[in-house]
Length: 57
Image (cartoon, rainbow, N blue to C red; front, top):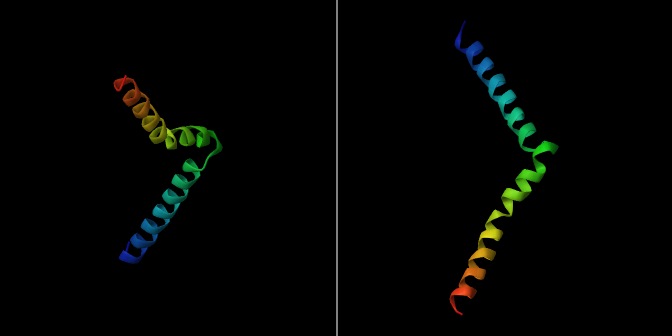
């Protein structure tokens, strides 16, 4: 096996891995989970502001 064959195999392997990750990330099964995870930052801010309001009483 020469270096060109190894590079070709490596390129195909990375290409397949990339599309596997894209398929996993954009799968319909995971959409709800990712949307929930994306909103965690806002939920934390909302809890912080509620706690600050209670501290001022």
